[in-house]
Image (cartoon, rainbow, N blue to C red):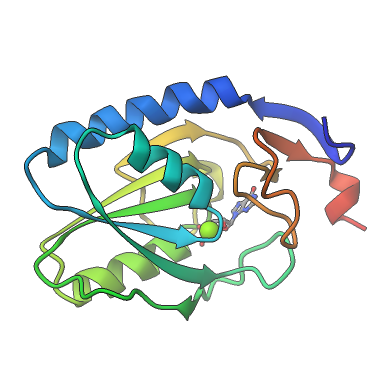
Length: 179
Ligand code: IMP
Ligand code: MG
């Protein structure tokens, strides 16, 4: 285990099992349709790639980079679109894939943006939900895991751009971000 990790929250096996459940949930809703799946970069990238490969339904993919943190561990409350989508979303069934819904500001911003551009439906899947930290009234349609007020890293999730490539999800030691 990485020396900065206090404990493991999800093993690779546990992630895989839940990803299969999320994929089945999506297959049920989107079979026979042509949904556009959007990965909110960079945190959701590992989850996104595993999720679309676990599905039976063929989907199209697009990417958007949203930054809410600067380099700290608290959301700024004003998510910034760093890189926009390549494809139009008008009249498309959109599935937004997020890593964590924390304060909810990012998801709210994305929902307003995408529905404002005329998407015909908007569905959100998140790897983690942190309900205790919510500042705005929004939730993912499918959240794989609920977690309390802990700062986690790995499987795409970072602290100051580090730890994304760990294959598991772990709680980061407080001394790392409270220095
Ligand atoms: P929100 O706008 O506050 O909901 O923030 C959402 C974003 O903050 C997520 O997409 C993550 O990228 C990031 N985030 C929130 N909590 C954590 C965490 O525990 N570890 C790593 N990133 C996090
Ligand atoms: Mg994110």
